[in-house]
Length: 490
View 1 (cartoon, rainbow, N blue to C red):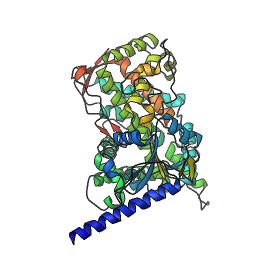
View 2: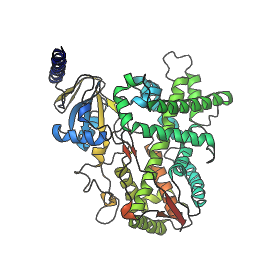
View 3: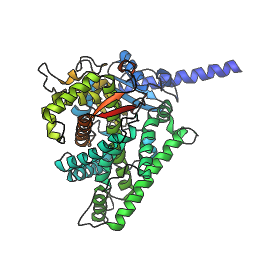
View 4: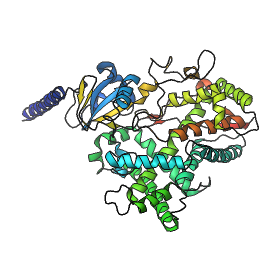
């Protein structure tokens, strides 16, 4: 009987594989490894290093291939050409949003980042316009960043040369910039609730980048009902939602429709304007979820990039010294940096770009989805199929970066030392769903980075040759290794 059972199971698996293979041929889907029932191609990937697994599979099937992560059928795009052709040349076809199960557990189709259709269009248009009205990319937001940089410098100075972990020093400053836009105020650096929020965001990003987070992303339908680390992530997400909901309630009680103070006020005014519209996307649930979207996105990615960047400078003190020299030459030791200085500081600009390229904070970007049956590179991708534009393969494309595995600011400098743009530099992705916080992030990275290095020298607790700049985790996000450093006044 055991033999008959094994034979029956083998037959079922073979038939399922045959059906899947036939369906792929009928749809002319991109090639890829044959999946098994239920688990898909789980045996072909390493959940501890999903990115490396996807890159490895590319070696067999090419830059466009199909993979099944559990029950999810996904088309993977690798390299600049494939990503650009899909997300720019066929932007409308590839304009849907795919699944990120951890965040979807909370958002469930609400908010600006993880939605589709008319809801996504309306909320995205409103968010971009409102953030611009509050100064994103303009001088007014530059002033807020510089004000926050002042508080950061004071906090760094208070360490008095003692070793410290820079994680919360940086996340507090970056988060306060976006907080001033969406909540109308900054938080004191010692505010316990503020520190709790920052911890929640950091822990959520860490979970999505662990092996368990990758498995949850594949099998969330089952794991939602099981114990495990995902429960802690859910608790953190709920904590963020509850905080923003309280903020929204406070704003409702003190709202002056003629004088909106921040993003939440503007959304509340829009809700009032459209209260008679039964099809309006402006209601409380979308307000809370959109604000959570922007708060997480505006905090964690930039602060992680800065934290990783300081670690890289500890590894390469000669690069730090060149940045110091350029700051002294262009800005000096006393004048406050301004964003316009960037045009006169090609080396510093190149270093910041290379930090973004090398650290690759969101290596697989947010997943996309084709909104209709789509013809792409001779294949037919059925409507609703998810798409992974693997940004890591764009930012390390050897056709565009001479030494992609190395940290090298020369990737963004010409032979004369002038800054050189690179079309494959896409840390904010491209197409209809690119990160609309890009102007703010660029300004923050430059102003925080130059402010720190204008006033301080960085000192490692380890010799440079012993510093490991490989990531601690790579999954949904890239998480740098924990470290401590000292800063001494220049």
